[in-house]
Image 1 (tube, rainbow, N blue to C red):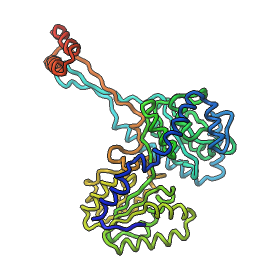
Image 2: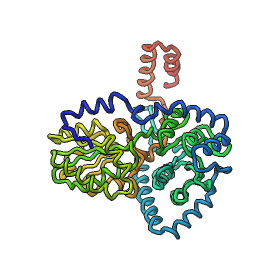
Image 3: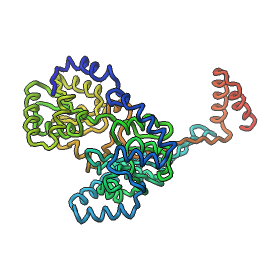
Image 4: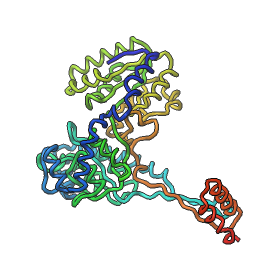
Length: 438
């Protein structure tokens, strides 16, 4: 990992991130043309195009894309018998995710209020009709992503939740993904992956229904497809390389820090593991712990490639400096290995999820604690949060009027503003109601 002083951070950040921008960092600029071609072919060719791309990119090209709910339930029964420990863990995680999502749902309330006499304003929170959850199954089958996507959608009240995941050799998604889909309550399942799956959900094919929202992580082709199709369909956000930032003090445990950095780095060589420490001695202790743990890690090759490519340790001189750097990086995951973590939390503004204290390992958020693991990357935590119930709910507004002083004042103001903007029909629309309010 590269080690720099805090005074050199701004120059480093400008050179490595600021000068390239998020599109280049995620590699979307290099796949744009390919993805646009895939989208066009799926839009015109439907299921036939999905099968053609499956033959090129996936482990099989199934004749039938749809997987029956009965098969998913059977996969769950199989998993219960073959690996009861995993099934129990998935059930516990599902319960936590559902309970957390239900608390989120309570924050979305319908209301109508009379702002002033005769002026009634309100809102309704309406779930989308159909949502797609994309679940990758490349180097690692992301079983947990099924729960993280499907459960909040169901809690939000989505009428139909569609799961999309690439086929394996048997023409079906990974059996554990199917089991998780049954557990989470997915309504329909299709064996299709990659950018072509995103296009199918955006436009619809003979088998895959058109969806209103598509959520879930994926490779740069999936991310590019979501970016291109945003507007045609709603999305959660465009995911780039996963990342973690840890702020540690002098009393933190180097072994725990190293373990958490490696948990991020093992995702892929583009993953970014970063650390803020108060002195060079702590930086050296963490580096030594990393080397020791890499020696026994089955994913060491990938983790080392990640650390060599973008691993970073910054030595800060004050907590104010550490907070400023953290807010600049806007990490996907922010861990605080600090004795007094609560003291700086109010000043931390930009992160996907916060993990306060050494016990709060980011891996718990990944899997089982209840919070969502689909989070903003590439600095997008500056303007958005992670996947939640809100991504499946439309907050729509309403206006109802009755004769009264508030209505009359609002009507007059509308006419005045319309006149200033030069929109004469708008002015007339407002003024035409002058007699109706009496």
